Image (cartoon, rainbow, N blue to C red):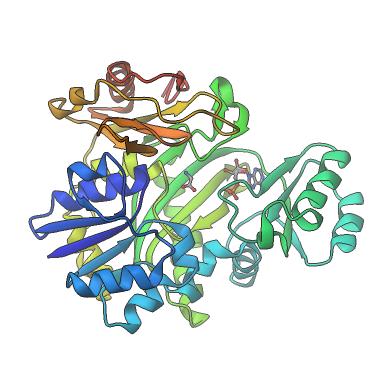
Length: 421
Ligand code: AMP
Ligand code: GLY
């Protein structure tokens, strides 16, 4: 088969790596890809939001299967566009990707179908939001309704912060149209767990659990980022919690989307918080997580292409999804200064270590080739070093050792990913 993956980050590198293991994959393309993906796939310089460019490319090359990694094109309706042309594509249609694309939609869905989540109110009117916030219990969580590069969530400890936040989202429109509506949510406490799942519209099969480290600095200090590392599985996601989530969260979400006439085909990423009152949904994403894919996919035993096809063809019930009984850890190597401001264009050395390191992967997140053909830094999150070992503790040791082999100026990573697990 000829397979096209759409996206350019560590997640897409992990997807391409999994696809490359499939005997069904004869030729892999990635649009636009990055310097690491280029070792496994032919990268084509078409942007993920250039739907017409991607459709023409897929037709011209007779692509048999396209996999969309990123949220923006999914929410924008890329799957509908590919389907209109009779092209096989993995991911939710626009009317289902709204599960991630609108927080107000997802909160209303959870309320309607009794799926456990934090209490909330939605506002389209700034003054009404301000009035509500003045009488609300603190801390409080403000969420821009639409996609905001993972930055549209503000946790406010004081009234002043909350009023500032509401202004930022709704009045200053810092996140653009994502702030046309705002969800004001009750603050929850507990451990966070990510569960990714494959869905074919009616059946859901969950992948192994993982835990993400979102803050920039050790000890969960500093600003929120796209994720500084993670590990899988998490021991806090017990069989008992899993049984609860399968019955009260996962199956009901898929059934709810189907009843709403929005059958979901693709990956649902459940961001969960294990609260004192039981597991609750923090958020839904309509795609693999980044870096969740970098710890989960290396542990998956199945041929991923079989799973993608089963989802598209509505026969996921035939697939027995199996993960290795081991552990994995991913440490993100970032540019110092991320997520605020950082320099790019520094040459990266030591990558050849991974050519012969068994069970170690170096997923490229923000890299590019410079004019001399060298691999250089090209983003805030540069690389994700993942190790798979007998358990999380061993994987942690191996990931940090492997990460030492890679050098670039201003390299920064957290030193406490999976510490104590
Ligand atoms: P989200 O993009 O919705 O996952 O939010 C980003 C992060 O904000 C989450 O991973 C949580 O750490 C935090 N968060 C979101 N909603 C809440 C909430 N209701 N209570 C406490 N923390 C939250
Ligand atoms: N790691 C969180 C996300 O992909 O949204």
